[in-house]
Length: 298
Image (tube, rainbow, N blue to C red):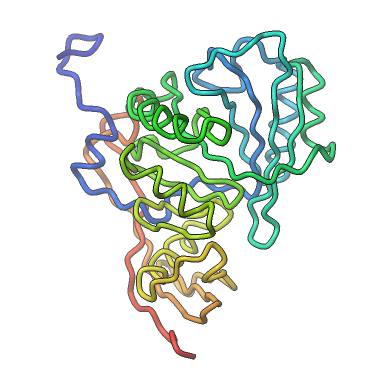
């Protein structure tokens, strides 16, 4: 196969990342809060510029997201174009440890959508599952994400949503479990339903887990290493007390419930391939190496 210029087409970024064994840990996109806007599409490459969205309203939402360390995603039902006359949902999620909650309301696609930033809305007691299917941003997300979304929607049509870009396209399919903001990569359609079912009972399946969005990359990685070492599976296990850079490349991350300390080395690795389907052929990625895990029985 060739690309538009006649050159040999490269495999998708997700295939290349799998072959290279790119580490998942510490790659979850940062967000203390999430704002989901139901919009059936089409979605532009930059989601908030999509047809049918009011630019002034989207600019206001983007400003709120910057100040609240929030991530905005467009969502839609799998395989359902939606009724253009039906009010659409919004969800505002607090994903911070100890503050996990979901509020919801409706919008009509007009400027009134900005109410989602501040109105109280209604409590939403169910968990939400997002699967990135944003093909205009990255083909791997569409190809792999839609297969995963189809399987999850068949088992849980109310709790499953397709979503726009959430970061880390090379780990497609990307799945987010809310309200805890657990971001997964590369989970197969066969294994994903079990991961979601476990989450709804308060259990974290750490396979394929990239990290929790409300934590820094170093803290995400430390928590994952600690989970693996002691077998902690509860959603509230191993809360982060502090993450401190003690020299130019070394992180010390303090965790509790149970108490432990994780030492990591941060480094940047050059790669000779694109990290997304639209990126340049070479890139760089950040990785964290485990140096030590201490004081498990303190």
